[in-house]
Length: 102
Length: 102
Image (cartoon, rainbow over all chains, first blue to last red; front, side, top):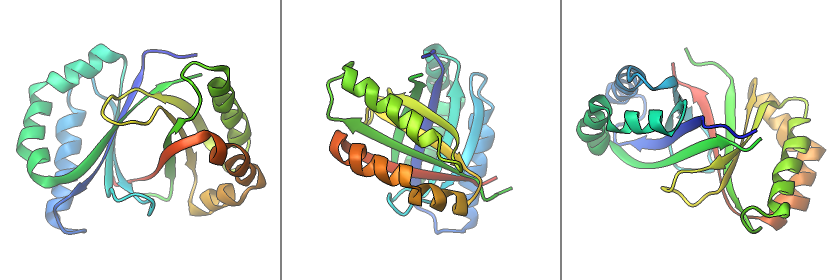
């Protein structure tokens, strides 16, 4: 049965060389900063390994409902991470939001 | 710590009208047929609700390792679903495979 829970995922690529310190630092900082935002649940950092798309990494997280998602979007830690890191280190990205059908 | 587990997700759109019986039937049949393949774990059916991309639905599932993923790809139930339903009812899709970084 559908409920209000949202799984938010973003697949992305970085300007940094694969395996570089800068790449690892971005992933670690994203994990530390974004997972600490109060409405974020089950924050995970992934390598995107399918050869069928061009994205290298993924962040995923869960929100209890749309209000929790909006609180994350507006949170200063999220806004700051987007402005200071995402906009300068990410070369491409795609956001995906899932809600249960059954 | 990275492990061999893979989260496979595919975002897609259907040729069927939104809210139609055909749309629901595709989602139900995908759930029934694909989730029954032995190496598939945690099969889920999602509505894709972000306005930032054009895909309407998602299937996601987990595999213990690459061998389990390959067994799914080669399984007759998967091959048959792709040939009989996916290729005739899906208008666009993107596959995403995640492995843990940390």
